[in-house]
Length: 450
Image (spheres, helix red, strand yellow):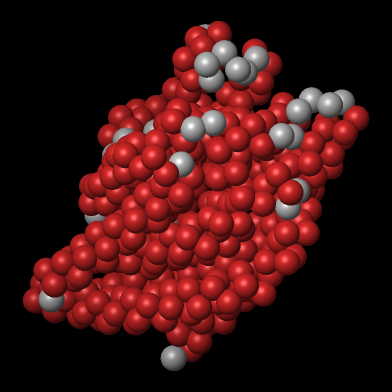
C-alpha cells in the first residue's frame, strides 16, 4: 500500500510539473507564432514547415533507433548498467554519424536540388544538418532526466531553451531580417546550450567513470542490430505525422502547406500542453509498475523452480490487471478530451481569430478534425505501454507501417481533388487506424499470456 501511494504521489507531482512546464513552453510558442506569421507569408510559413520536417527526418534516420532502444532497455537495468548503456549509445552514435553528417554537409547542393527543389540556400542546409546532428544529444539528456523522475530539472532546462529560441527568433527576424533562417539559427543555439548543460551533469553524476570506449565499440553491432528496427518505426511515425505536408506541397501550393501547418499547430499545442506531460509522467510510472510487479513476484517465488514459475505467472497476472485498468483510463480520458475539445473550440474561437492574422483564417476550418486525430493518437500511447514492456518491437514497427502507407496513399488520392480538406480527412482516418491496430494487438498479446 505504501509503495502504491508513493507511485501515485510521484505520478501526480510529475504530471503537474510537466503540465505547468508545457503550458509555459507552449505559451512562449503561442506568443512567437503570430509574430512569425505576421512576418512570413503563408508560402514562407509552409516552406519553414518543410525545412523543420527535413530536420526531423534526418534526425530520425541518423539516430539509428538508439534513443528508442534506450526507452526499451532502460528500466531493465540497475543504476550502474544504465550509465554504461547511456555511454555506449552516445559513443556509438558519435563515431558512426559524425562522418555521415560531414558528407551530407559537403553534398548540400544535391540536397537543395533533390529535397527543396533549389528553394533553399547553402547556409540554411548546413544549419539544418547541424541541428539534426546535435539534437540527438539533447534528446538523450531529456530522456535520462525523464526516466530518472527529474521532472523539475527537465522542465526548467526546457523552459530556458525555449526562452533562448524566443529571444533569438525576435532578434534575427526583426533586426537581421533573416526570414526562415532565423528560426533554424535560433534552434541551433538553443540545442548547443542544452548540450553544454548535459555535459555538466554528465561529469557531475560520474557517467564518465563508466566510460569504456573499446567495450562500447565492441558492442556497436549489438546496439545497431537491436536499434535498427526502430528506425523504420520512427520514420513511419514521421510519415504518419507530417508526410501529408509533402503530398500537399506536391499537389497543392506552399500556401496550402502554410494554412495546414497553422491548423496542425493547434494539434501540436494539444500535444505539448496535455499529451506530453501526461505521457512523460504516466509512461515511466506504468513501466515501473510492470517491472516492480515482476520483481516482487520473482522474489516471492524463492529459488525453487516450480515456485519461480508460479511466481512469474503471478507477476504476469498482476500486469494484466494493471493494463486492464490502464485501458479503462484510456477510454475515459479520450471521451473526456473529445467533449472538451469540441466545447473549447466553440468558446475560444473569437480568441483564435484575434491571434491569427487574417490570411490564415482558413485554418479554422480544419482544427477540430485534426484535434480528433490527435486524441486517437494519444490513445495509442496507453495501449502501447504494455507492448513496450513486453518488447514487441516488430509489432510496433508494423503498427506504424500500415497507417503511414495508408495515409500517403489516401492523401495522394484525395488532395488533388479536395485540397486541404482531403489532407485532413486522410490524416484523421490514419490515426484512427493506428489506434485500432494497437489496441487489437494489445488484447491479442494479453490473451496469449493468460
